[in-house]
Length: 342
Image (cartoon, rainbow, N blue to C red; front, top):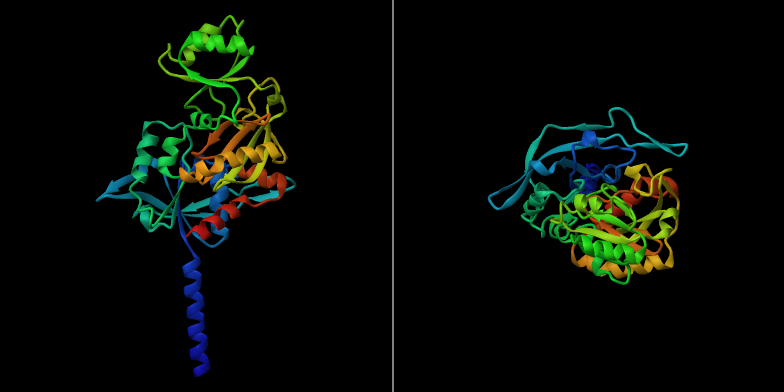
């Protein structure tokens, strides 16, 4: 009888210990049926959380609210069928996920909330970050910080790291842009609010369409754009480096498709294994403390020829590809970091 009593209580203690270690994670994502389980980093993170025994909940930015001074969301409990890596390719089942019925919950009932909605950062996107400000930070970890996301325009944020970036201007002034391009011989034009290489153009001063390109890109001089000196090393790839709390944890090299100067995966680029160079480690070190201060925990930076070109903070991707190329499990590393923080 005493033996049974001890066994029963020991089992109960073990159960409590397991429950104490299990955490509830909410992911604010785009509609899940639009995600690619073999590519999207959000899915990799959620898979890792499930594998490590945690609860996963999902919602969307348009399903967030503030009620009585607290952030709420309409959430669904998620169960995933993890992808399998077979002969160098990820394979997913159909269906690859299962959702429970929708439930309205205060987001502070979650241990951590991941803001993983894809850019562009539109007005509704900004409003969603304002709602996330009403999560009690003493109860719930938010990755990335909503204030940090608002601070870090993914093009402009890099400008403060003057020792890391190539020569860059931001302006809507056509003559200023022409002068810069003539001095450099060629340049890259980037809209400040786009993603995945959208709207990026190669500029040369003798292009007969030069004025029209600038007028269209700046909406007739009303919207500033970024113009960056062209880096010839771009032909060798555009490196994506993933940072966790300021520390680099993995990287891949993105190579442009034939007939395309952009290296973005969304523009048809391919990926290749790579290493992080000493110069790139210096760049990461330059960013680390600022990223931490701004609450930007999970970040992807882009580096070309030893120069920082962008800092991605909304929904950085690349984890699936890095894991496939290197046999790593970056999602597990991220979730373990969250466990330690909690």
